[in-house]
Length: 239
Image (tube, rainbow, N blue to C red; front, side, top):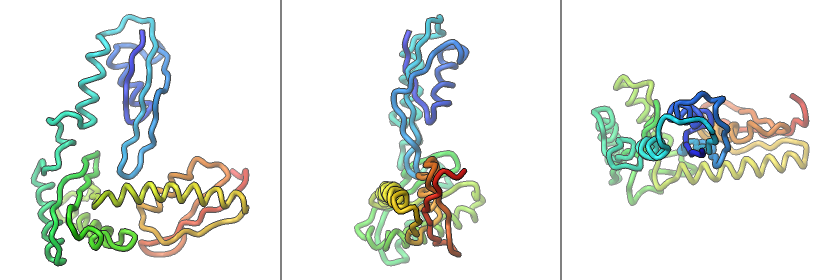
């Protein structure tokens, strides 16, 4: 019999299959149907097909549809799909951000963009979004930094606040991934190195992560302070 399962990683999808079918992992074969790497604003995603001749614990329709829909935020009842504040902490963050924007002289509203383990995203909707974002996102970074400081004062240093507006973070992430691969190809051809523009820690980590699995290219951060530069260089076959 054949069943399909999903998860944020291959391991999670296989664990789901084993639990839902009531089988040991050695009792079925796994075929990877679809995979998507995680990023700053995008969750990792893996879809697998399970082949087994064993008697399963329950029909596939009962195990796969409802639980995954709830987790992925496809039902209106899931708090992960709600832009409204779900608790006092989120309400205070929204109030803080809207008040900060107002004191800067701009109108805007703030809502919850996503919720993940130890990370919450907030979205600013404003006709002044280009100003609030700033050149290469520096104004948005500054507001985000203040939001994280405020979260710490509320006793939630364990929560990381991510701020976005007009999908800037997603567009920036896609642009940086393309840049990383383009520069990696360039340093392969030249057998040299290339120094990128100064970036915040989130952008630098994305460059490092994107190129981490390329064996003949390496990255390192250079400089001092918050905005450092990433150097991408050719290392041949050295380990």
